[in-house]
Image (cartoon, rainbow, N blue to C red):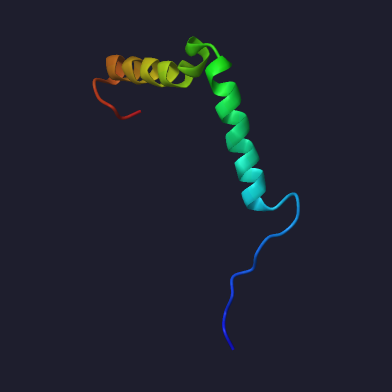
Length: 60
C-alpha cells in the first residue's frame, strides 16, 4: 500500500485560489500610488523613532 498526497480538484482548490490572488496582486500593485504602498513602512519607522526618542532604546 503506497501513500499518496491528496490532490485538490475543482475550480476553488487552494493552488488555483493562490494563483488567482497572485495574478490579481501583480495587476493591481503597480496601480497603487507609491506613498500608499510605503505607508506601513513609514508608520513603523515613525513609531520606532518616537519610542527611541522617548526611552532612549528600542524597548517599548
